[in-house]
Amino acid sequence: MKLNIGCGQDYREGWVNLDLHEADIIADANKPLPFPNNHFEEVLANSIIEHLDIGFFEFVTEVKRILKPNGFFRFNVPNCFNWKSRIKYLFGEFPASSGYHYDHRWLYKPSFIVAVLEAQGFEVKGKHSDLFDADIKIVCRKRM
Image (cartoon, rainbow, N blue to C red; front, side):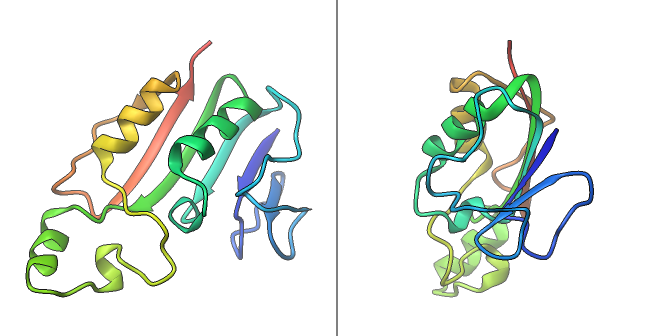
């Protein structure tokens, strides 16, 4: 079974799609998710984490709870600390393309995300650059 958190218009056939509106499961990702422990083989959360009121650590804790051992967690968030964004910030520019957006509650950089995931018992696949990646695209596996 696969879960798509914050599906929005990215409704996926064969997945359990969760969102605040028009989804298989109507639920708020800021609250405990309505699923038992170790329930999903894969969890997807694209372009939602930066919008949540709860912090990244709390969200990852909840994903870990519902994910089966060796299950995959995939997500993306904007990298607000890449070199292009840093230069724009120096000159007082905060364009949405740099990850800064009025609706984003959190700003992330890859090294922080990887550190939290590893502390939570996930194995992070691939390399991620604080300076060069415009988007942070993570694939990680819950360890046994």
